[in-house]
Length: 231
Image 1: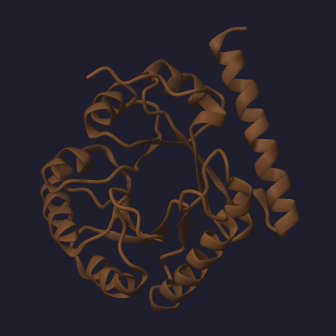
Image 2: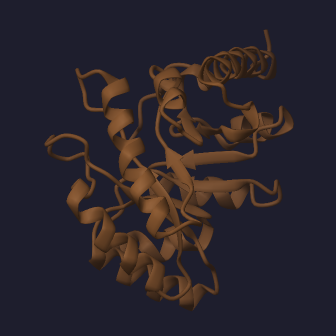
């Protein structure tokens, strides 16, 4: 089996899972975007996925993402940055990312705005919400979301897109995603254009879709087991 055939079969399986989850939730499949998380995989895989109909691609490390986005710059893809973002990486990330999923503090909003203005770009910003107390995963506390949303909405050259979260390790993802849905609803009331909910990955996309996810971040189910990163 060629790599394209492998990816095609995986994508068909993921699309079937999304379709079944949408049907169970009474939703249309048009409401859910599959975001291919291609970290550790080559740009050639991005090209093949684009040929198969994928329009949205995500990376979590700027060093890898910047190179890959440049190599695939003529494919017309929407690029998502989903990793924790340090302020010293913002200038690079803003140069290619259309959507930044990991906005979790006002200092980051300030720097994102400055660099977006400088680059003449307007990335959509998702507030990463911490649904547990795990260290090292990033995210704003639920009670910080409203103020952070206001900061993004008022910042020059930034667009408030919605919320993002990762289900807590070892916990019921459905409960976590239901909590995120409540936070997203409150945000949407205050900011009607902020309608994105980025939640769910290869192992829990069904639960996320049941709770209103508009974007599911799929890596392993599409591309296979992650390759080791050589540093």
